Figure (cartoon, rainbow, N blue to C red):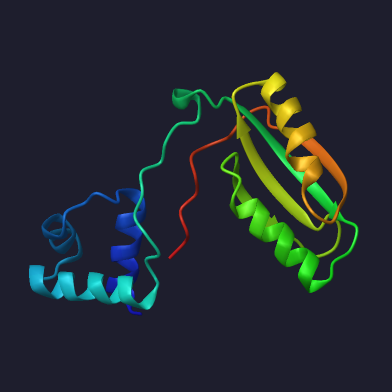
Length: 150
């Protein structure tokens, strides 16, 4: 990966809908050369996917919680079952496995506090291998999603 590839990645992170023609002009390449580089960045996995960033509030999901999960056991089978179930729950929009304690951090979006309490009682508490859940409510998100420094 060279400086031009990094510039392409940087520009696309800022505006994923940039046309290949505009991208080529901004990085100083011919259209065909820029297209080849873009396809190679996609093929290599440097570009994982394209997507729109949706406002949670605009779709009625204005209540956000970070849930820290401590597992009772961390054997491979238990962890695999837990992770597989977490991937199937749409309200969990981000999940991270951590070193040390807690074992996992989950980012949850729901409409309001009542919905979160129901979700906590009926879904989160039923996840396999969970010993303890600790929630922190998000007061405010500061700044947009950060770009990867390329």
